[in-house]
Image 1 (cartoon, rainbow, N blue to C red):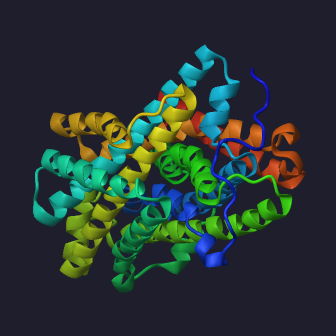
Image 2: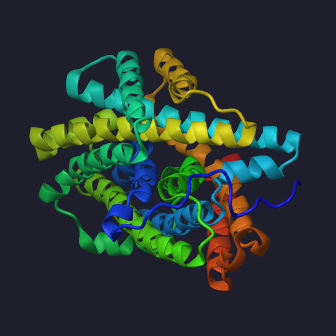
Amino acid sequence: MTAPVPAASAAPAARPERGLLRLLGPAFVAAIAYVDPGNVAANLSAGALYGYLLVWVLVAANAMAVIVQYLSAKFGLVTGRSLPEVLGERLPRTARLLYWAQAELVAIATDLAEVIGGALALYILFDLPLLAGGIIVGAVSMAILAVQRRGQRRFEFVILGMLAVIAVGFVAGLVVSPVDWGGVAAGLVPRFEGTTTVLLAASMLGATVMPHAIYLHSSLARDRHGASTDPARIRRLLRVTRWDVALALLVAGGVNIAMLLLAAASLPGVAGTDTIDGAAAAITEHLGPVVGIAFGIGLLASGLASTSVGAYAGAEIMSGLLRTRIPLLLRRLITLLPALLVLAAGADPTWALVLSQVVLSFGIPFAIIPLIVLTGRRELMGEFANRLALRIAAVVVAVLITALNVALLVLTLSGSG
């Protein structure tokens, strides 16, 4: 391993401080990963098949996400480096290439979910063939990424606008859905009912705590606020970041829980609700065309925003681990192709989405464990190294995620269900 990375680097210089609201934003971009179409597939499937049983998974996953995303942003602010950059410098060549390979697989699984979700939305709204919809989603996402080249703040505004559309689209159905709040309370008690519920829980976790968002957030925070060696300024930015992460994930977590509640309240026992297009048809039939259209628009915004953010993350991962930077739009094409091939092959889009989230859940420890280790090192983080309570909380998160994945593997291989 190479020598520790210094706190100061070639990252942007410190900028003048502004009001709290103007400092918010990076976490909201990262939070798009938490309301992508993979979430829709996992949450609707869980709610339609098992009612309120797995509400606890979303609550726990969102609490984990707050800790993880804060650590990622903190790492970028304190070191002036992104997590992939530091890993790329500290890992020997073979380990670095293997690490990049698993991160690239995660990026492909991420884009698979997001492009398929956007294509499904276009099918729901306009009856477009899935392959044509996937091509359109890819093209529009390139236009969104072009905004990023004109400044991160403009990109944040675009993503924030799309997050608002996503929230309205996915929450609208709850206005007319008779939620059983007693069932919701019972769903807060952790439990499973067979292998399928473990598979869904792993999928929901993979869709909530996203590896590429962990890698990306360190870059977003650094690029927005710049590197600094002034402890007072870093402390202020960390306070702002706590608000940024808490607010962003409050929104994202609320949207995810709303999706599961909608499916549990309105779709149990309805034929076809184990697919997104079937669920959309059932929502339209049972809750009215306005709610159905709102759901379709929310799904489309989710696919477009999340695939753009995912491509951004993939470029940062490749740049840090391979020490090679390629044009962002070319990067968009690299991860778009596998998704289009899946659509062309005619695979079941909803279960392709759910299984892609399971792949993501297995990639989480590879992102979370190095993050916990590095943010706890005083020679790298100085006085901002994780304190004991935060270190324990982060380790508990990593252990729980790993345990869920091991349980999934054991139950699946044993055929329990």
